[in-house]
Image 1 (cartoon, rainbow, N blue to C red):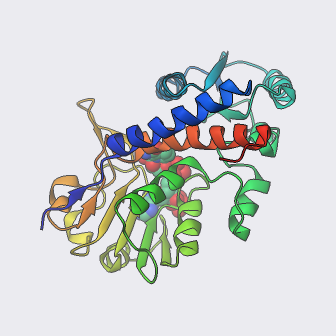
Image 2: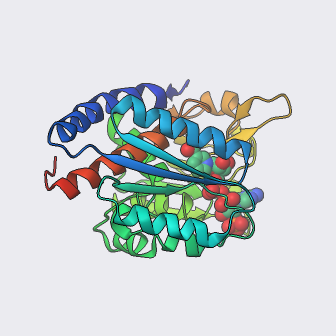
Length: 286
Ligand code: NDP
């Protein structure tokens, strides 16, 4: 079996065309959606992520503003800026690019974002709302993964799903969404005893670890849906995922590539969350 590729670029493009129309509608009402991105420190990967997010906003008709701080910036300067953005009616989403420099406490900074502008869905109120089944903002990466299932008509109810990774931004919300969709979910992590055995059972396998090619072909159940969230840079500069793509592709039924899989969908869901926030603020729903 050669797996069907779940093409994140193509799906992102399709969704963004609809978002553009919605952004135009809001703009015509005088309520143009706006996203503020805060970048602190000089992490090169963060700069690229921020540039991609700002470009994606631009292409979709969402106004974006970038607030850049040097590595030694005071935490109070970031908090002051967040307070201003919280009060700014032209801003519907605030995103703080992680990681932050060592002198800034991510919990304090993220906790300062108004819950109704927390488009990453990282604040405790929004995590709790997701857990209780009435989410306001679903974290972008797991939301993007769910879009793949929807688009490819992959049923989740009753399925054995295994999520490798238990981070707050990917693994945990991913598990929550799969559970809500009716899957039976196992979450694996660095202390899991027999990772291979768990993965082999998975009809839906989501890898979100950050270790190149750690999910080998023999860990995949024939016919599985394999979602590779990992982004790893190899010594030759090329990107690869957490899944050993070539052998996995011959065993799985569906697989996401890296690059061009989950990555474009993460940014696309940031646009979705910002747009929905602006629609809520304008009272227009959809
Ligand atoms: P974290 O480092 O926060 O979490 C990694 C998780 O992997 C942890 O739960 C850790 O377990 C687990 N883990 C580590 N080693 C093993 C192992 N040997 N076996 C099983 N589990 C293990 O990473 P993130 O969740 O933030 O990101 C994961 C990957 O996804 C990264 O490559 C990141 O770059 C990528 N990413 C991609 C995005 C996209 O848009 N495509 C968006 C966000 C992230 P423990 O908790 O026990 O330490």
